Structures are given as structure tokens and as C-alpha cells.
Amino acid sequence: MKKIITLLLVFGFLVSCSKEDATDNENATNTKLANQKNTGSSSNDLLSDTTFKSMVIELVYVEGFEPTQSSINNFVSFLEARTFKPHGITVEKRAIASPGNAPYTNQEIITIEDANRTKYNTNDQIAVWAFFADGESASNTDSGVVLGTAYRNTSFVIYEETIQDLSNSPFEPNRTILETTVISHEFGHILGLTNLGANMVENHEDTEHTKHCNVESCLMHWSVESGAGLNNLIGANSAPELDAQCIADLQANGGK
Image 1 (tube, rainbow, N blue to C red):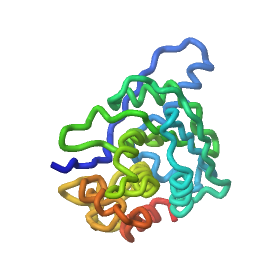
Image 2 (cartoon, rainbow, N blue to C red; image 1 turned 180 degrees about the vertical axis):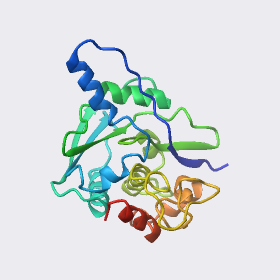
Image 3 (cartoon, rainbow, N blue to C red; image 1 turned 45 degrees about the horizontal axis):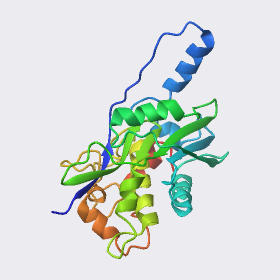
């Protein structure tokens, strides 16, 4: 049986805080909380330049599981096409040693972020955390695997080991195209798609696959997360794009 490929979206968020006596520690905790909200809740902040004039992507990967530079370039191009950030979008990339506890639960991914993230929102710059893992998701089953998860308002994980296992053989998608598709789809959820922080101009949410677009060719269609969607990428020259209705939603919430 062909496995179903899933890009998992987590709507909730988990925050663990301890009481701090020092004011500096309290201020640091408050700063971090702005980046520990629900997926989609920072849609307008990411799309518009009302508050944040620039964006920094803290891209952290486990050694040996770095995404291709073309995938990173495609991700930046995707952001530049849909967001207003007049002071620019930058990517700060670095490697870390393996946490050593794959397969990863959602809580373990959050723990990795909390231990390694250094970039948080400032007065005029919004920060995004992107982690490329060296193992599988603990949510994988015999019939399906998870490729990525958007789990906070500015955080997502890509299961790079799984992507590498599923790409670049003669009958599998090109790795850059698969990476670009997964990264862009997950960030689409962070931008508020579909009906997840960016209100719909017209109703186009798939009733059977909520928070996804009902247009089959759209980047945010549920089939992007399925075995059929993976097959559609074989031989493709580029990742799927957002359809007109998803673009209209982003534009109505402050984006391009």
C-alpha cells in the first residue's frame, strides 16, 4: 500500500514557563511569548509592514540534513512575493548536532526550538524559526508519514530525513521541488491559510480537509500532503503555487 504523505498542522501550542525573580529574565520570557502563539495568529504581522519592516528566518538544521540552497532561495522568493518587508528578508543558517531522540514528538520539536532558538521579534523585525530534523515524526504510521509541521505562529519543522528518503530516485520527486513544496505549504499555514488567521474573501475551505484550499491545483490543497500529491511532483519543474483565492485572502490581510 502506498504511504500517504502528510504535512501536519498543529493548531495549539505548548509553553513551559517557570517563575523568575530577575526582571531581565521576566522580560526575556515575555519577549519569547510573542513567538509562542497559535499557528496563523501572526498572519497580518508577517504579511504587512504595519509593525514589522523586516523578517529574519533562523534556519537551523541537524548536521547532514541541510536543505538545498535552491530550496532556501525559493522560500525567500515565496515570502518576497507575498509579504511587505521593505527592510528585507534575511536567512541566518546554522547546523546543530543531532538531538538524538528521533522519532520526534511535537513536544520534543518544541523543546528543541526552546533550547536552540536565538531570534525573537524586536520592535520592527519579525523572527521565524525553521528546523530541519534528522529523523522521522513520531506521528508516522504504517500507511502515512509526516513531512512537516507548522506548530506555532512563527515556527515550523521539516522532517528532512523523510524528504531525502522520498526524493531524487528515478521515480521520486526532485529534492528541491519536494523541499520547496513542503516549506511553502507549511509557511502558508503560518501566513493564515486556509481560514487560519487570514479570513477568506470567498469561501474556499475544503470541508473534508479543513484549513486547506478546495482548488486541486493550489499549493494549499490537501492532496499536496498525500501520496497522490507526491506523485504529481514527479517530473515537475516547480512546486505548486497558491491559487487566486488564497492570494486574495493574503492580500486582504495585508499581504501582496
